[in-house]
Length: 351
Image 1 (cartoon, rainbow, N blue to C red):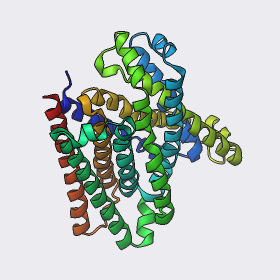
Image 2: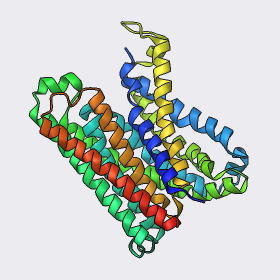
Image 3: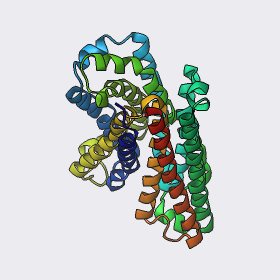
């Protein structure tokens, strides 16, 4: 039986993993962006999905062999589109920082990723408008968006009030105009991951029929969707490596020799953390009952909460006025409230 409160907990764990994944990359030294991004990506898009799916699911090879080609194709295609979002997500962090960057990207991602699947499946009205639980979930989505707007406005106010030299000290490549443009594109493309998971519902059914427990049936879907992300990111990073002639950095070549062991370990940690957001996401979704699509809102809200906290930890807010800091804390409070409302809405549906 579904347990929405347990599902909320899993989504918070996934949100923490997502908000934290970029932190290890900050410790990578003397590697170009394309080198550490692709290194971490091999762990997150290839090694981790297949390892955990092999360990936690029954007959992974058989399930995927019986998956219709069209289903697998849609999962990979949406994964490739999501890959564009993930690719530019890293750029957003470089240009806007953790707090403001996550708010803009994930606001758009929340709307598209939550509402498009039920609209596409034709049951939007039946699930969300015609029931008390559905209307409660919609209220939670509205509160989530309000919280995102508050956090984003606080981030914009913070950066507008600070001297450019101060902003550059905490976000080395800060560029508001370029960052916002990249963030919008990233947010729309990133929502395609939710579409890939929805397209993979037949695979979850096959996995359950093979004897996989309810918590783990979504893991085979991740193998396909994240492979699509690997294709997109791999092509882009390979082009950058060829252009910048940076491949030698993997074996320590360069004007200054990079700390190879530390860099590889940090990239592995970042990549596995990136994967764990969806590992816990599939677990949380399995507990949300008929409103599984609301998982996307919970996931986005928790990422912004923990991403903003990381922003404080890295002193991105240290020079902001008290009024602005109070504003961002208000936004976090709204996001926490939204998770409670959505969890309650799902519990009504289960009851």
